[in-house]
Amino acid sequence: MPFYYRLGTLPKSRHVQFRRPDGVLYSEELFGTEGFSGPSSTMYHINPPTQVHGWKPLYSTRPEYFEADVMRMRHIKTAPMRPSGDPVTGRVVLFGNADCEMAVCVPAEPMPYHYKNGQGDECLFIHFGTGVVHTMMGSLRFGPKDYIIIPKGVIYTMIFDRRKRAAEGEPAVADMPYGKFLVIETVNGSHIGPPPRYVSKAHGQFLEHAPYCERDLRLPEQPLTWNEHGQFEVRVKARDLMHSYVYDYHPLDIVGWDGCYYPYIFNIDDFAPITGKLHMPPPIHQTFEAHNFVICSFCPRMLDWHPQAIKVPYNHSNIDSDEVLYYVEGNFGSRKGIEVGSMTAHPQGIPHGPHPGTIEASLSATYTAELAVMCDTFRPLFPTRAAIDLDDPKYPASWQGEHFPKLRAGELKLNGIAAREAPALQVAAMSEHKPAAANTWAPNAPLPAATQPSKPAANGKHPRRAPAKPRRRR
Ligand SMILES: [Fe+2]
Image (tube, protein in one colour):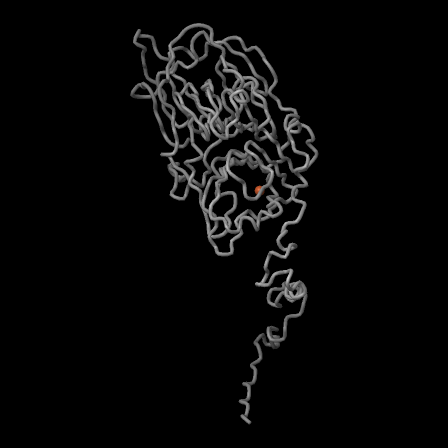
């Protein structure tokens, strides 16, 4: 994060003697990025953070992509996913490329170890469930609709509260004993943060036009420090391989830290949507970004208020992006057949837009309760085997069908005349529309006489026209 924060006990200056109650020096560690030129934090450990052993390889985390050369729309239904693994091993990668990976996790068991993603930042969007993330920089309690941003290198463990009952609309406890979350992580070494256009260049303060600000972020709190000895496993993901390291002390042994590099939470309900008289494009929903991808929040909001506004998104080709939407709750006006937990993927090579019938159905709406998380990538995304197994093969053809059924049924009135009453008149009225000459751009066509520029004379001056003679009235 761009702003400074501190937690716990710190010495007055950096790089000076700072002693434990028993007189031994604390171990200072600079946690820096971008070769000591980017955001960093300075931490004070009870034990030297270098004293680890083990480095046992556990399993590959490299996703295997299928149908990488096939471009088509996809609709992944994640609701049937069964609980498996823990909050790390249970992550099922569905899409990815060389910039990011997207996974869904329905944990079946707690994680009895700590974890560090040594190759990328993580954005964990909690769909269902509550709990706490204990990190080396403090604790973050989480709940539904929280984005948890965990920067690369931060050691943490994720503890879900075991669900006792299912609230209305939630999956049964047996199908989801702890919760469910979406994972978007960088694999290109970049960091996830707010879009630079939301913050001031000089100081990184959130600007007035940003849809959220510092007060909306929840930062790490106590408890921060565990002073325990024993054998503690820390699993480190690096080089697409999960490693097992062993610490002889609790890995969360920091008594204090300060700086601008730390985990935090932003709840999607605190996003203040930007609305407009006419349809606003997806960048207004942007929440975070990293190199070559963005994360957007589609939140409940007032719809466009122009009296003739079309309320659902127009057909669009976002020709430089692949677009994945994860549907959280509410009714998505422009899509049919979408359910809670659906994930759609729209590749850059083909337009997408409202499903048949949804434009007319939305015209009178003034509010949408839709809630979704979108990840747009600037390079093609590839599905994994798990995604293909959950894919609805009928989705790419779901735009087929009658877009304006009321017109065919004669219920829709154009120019105040029902099509059934006067179809011939309708067709005539529509075919009478011809582009005006002024709207036609044809560089080689001769201009109308009235707009032809007069030719300059040999001396370069335009000849003077004789003044028009006044007409005599009859
Ligand atoms: Fe789109």
